Length: 332
Image (cartoon, rainbow, N blue to C red; front, side, top):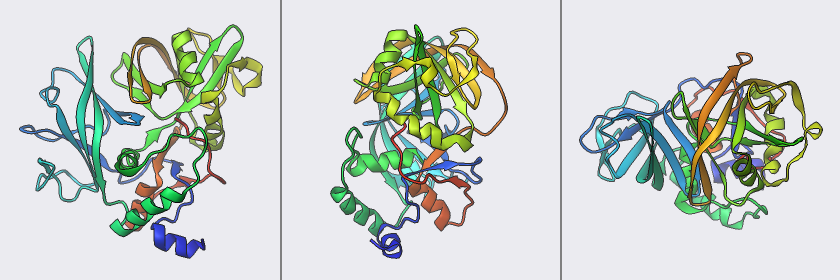
């Protein structure tokens, strides 16, 4: 398909699904949690995206009135929130670019923190005109499936696109044992507070088995300019551990676990598993943060979905993107 015709049909000018960021976005979207009877809560900095089949969003609360609500709305807007419209029974902002309907699926209490895991029910967005969205859904049905990739169809795909409108950090997880190690990227992770960290891995994958067996990991932030290398490690999710010397590691090891650190690490945390549970295709890990160390201050690797990137371009919002030569493996 000719590029001009393709852009006309798909509404997209980027040739890859995820766009890595060279620097922090200006004028980003903010996410507001909406429940009945309470003011909207800005959760941009505290919500964590930890699952895509189903969509899973986690938020840590401390004695909050928001905890008891079974059904909530997540509203994405780049303006100050103003409740002036209604959607799915929630008071939302008419300027919002996207909305997610979520239901409370699981709660975990650690100390004074209640971690609520919400599952996506429905998503709606205006990243692309409606006709481009319809045509893209049709084209997706004819797209060749990649062996090993998890297919996302229908509204679930839109929910995931919406979740990636907030930049998600891609970090490298390292596990090591008896001279063997593995190293693989993830963007389904994040801090709940100073002592609790969460992430998820695909049930049945080698990476998941290795983390469960060893019970501790090192998760490292990597400089954004090395996005190509990080994406290329996606295949390690399904690979056995290998001798340490077969990996491109730095001369430094983590302080407590003595795990090898990836080259170009800017910051790392050493984590021990506190508990796990399953949700859809994901095993969700709750960790205790036992140590962290900053090595240098740089902008770490984040990415967004190209639908949101296109919306920014259409609305003349700046974006400095790092584009890969060809599509790479999933980082999940």
